[in-house]
Length: 137
Image (cartoon, rainbow, N blue to C red):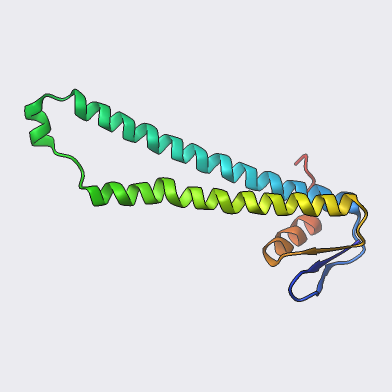
């Protein structure tokens, strides 16, 4: 099996074992799934923190609320952008990458002799293949 870059057509890996390519692609998929889980966890922590802050603010007496104040709306908007919106875009991007990797795995399982893969994946695949990583590691 030969692995080549989609854009340039240059060969990255020559005479590869399909089983090893599949294990590397699955490892790449697992890495992205872990990133998704960590981003979702980060979002949940932020939402929990925000809910706790709001609950604490509403439990205060009226006089204490007047003294304490709240963070300006633009601060909350920036926090929402950083902790919710950007991770959602990243999760969407990672899900697209996972679907691309799954399609590549099916191509290899179907017995394709040449696997054309996009540039960001070529470097990672080459590293995983040359290091000899497997899915179990």
